[in-house]
View 1: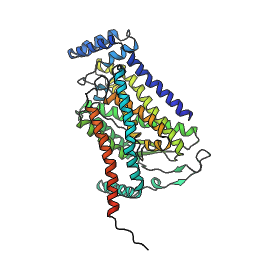
View 2: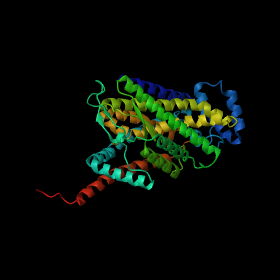
View 3: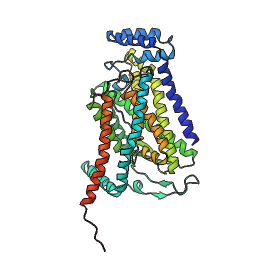
Length: 433
């Protein structure tokens, strides 16, 4: 539990820094920054001169505000994700907007649990039938792709393994989703392509290649970070650390859905989802330890995302005012992707659904789930859906899209329950003996 407290404290510090910088921005600094944004239409040369002459003499809060107002979705050499992110000075400068975003967060946390419970209960009651449907679908897909339907023994073999006092009677070995190295890499590449498709101009050009490469690097960093945190935690609690490569086709499905929603609503920077592969562990842990790890991993991911946000500010400035350096452009988009992808991945992963981390966490401690989920949702709303100002500010369209998705999820939950109820009614009654 101590590691959960430490992780929470670190995250609180990382969250407090950008909010402090944002609220420290004085009205005069914001006015000055707004003037620079208005003058940006003249050309990037003027912007470069202004930024260069004042870069090292401004206090931190004003520096953040200045850099936060120099972006344009039309900039050359800067990927859409990087060019559409606001800075702390833009996003957290209004206490009124922060209060509204906090209220929206509380509503989401309170009301998402009900349809999620309906969905989880339906899956639990019809688990065997759902597994059969999933297996049949898997076989059809593999047959269509010309792949073998043989299941590796390692992926289904589950045996109890005594591994010491920390995991006796609870640790099991299994490798669900076991992937070959080729399929692992292919899944990662497909995920990066889907991330690139958030850009409406994505295609066969150098700019798109930079975006693809940056997304690929960001997704890889995310997978390695998750592995490192889990390995450290397991070592502390005396669990084995044997790993295997795991591909997550359902992650590709979520990434594709995020692209469709983002493109259909003309929303930038879009919903970047990058959890398409993982480095998983053969031996599972106790439910309590697994829940602790979920909390620590989520807070670690969000902390890294916020650090990437801070580092992105000067890097983005260089990418905007420089000479189109390839390394600067890649680093700019990698940091932006780590920031946005970390937030989106945390929110989706913490949804209280069976099979997701949120479903595991809510069974253990509903209050802990609510707290961690609220942090991730608040960041998502503040940064992407309802920022106080900045390049990603598009009126009420993102919030309206989120409401439609929320209503759709509720309809899916009740529709799924109705579907299985109808199937039960259509089945012939079992003969009595």
